[in-house]
Length: 256
Ligand SMILES: [Zn+2]
Image (cartoon, rainbow, N blue to C red; front, top):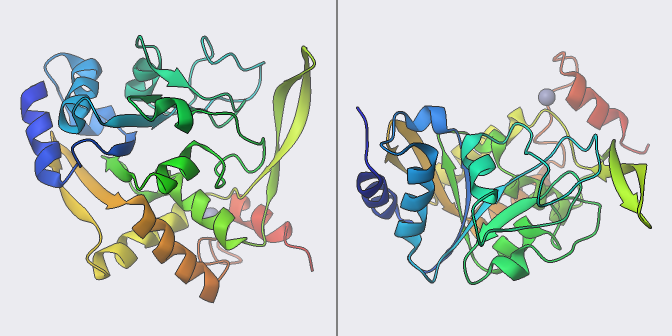
């Protein structure tokens, strides 16, 4: 049952992780299962699959309840792999007070460059730069509901909903609570991207450890999602009356 770093790297290459590319990874380490060497060995396997010219990127989002320090603030609900990744030597972390990312490799600095507060995952954000750099998105034991790349698609498609989240932002050295607008909802509807990508033959799937992994080009994910949002801008929201408070809040934000 226990897999080694070398076995994980071989599975990642077989899945189609591009040598020398940019790779954005959303991970559930628990789904990957027992790994000899733990989450650090998984991080090393990802680097091994990418090679020294590759750049590894992970979300390192925070709860926004205290002033964000990229060198100290722990991640919130991002999993142990991302939490250990940003703390490794030589890994950069972007500065968004709620929606930060960490990156390591030749493109890390530009991926983590400053960005506007809103939207957190727009074109001028780490996930937007992964898209511009023709990166890949790897979902390791998680579904598209966890994929920030679909928030980028929402921003590019200019969806009509936007919800403000109070976040502590340091302004002129003083912490202040700022309402940051983002295209938020429960994100369960993002799972629709599975069917779109499979139908178009644009998603590779296979095992990585015990996890089911999905791999796609960020550009394919965004293009297909923007097309679907063009025909139905609310395609990602739970239907009205489904009892989803978050999607109801997104619907209520739409200007009439
Ligand atoms: Zn919902």
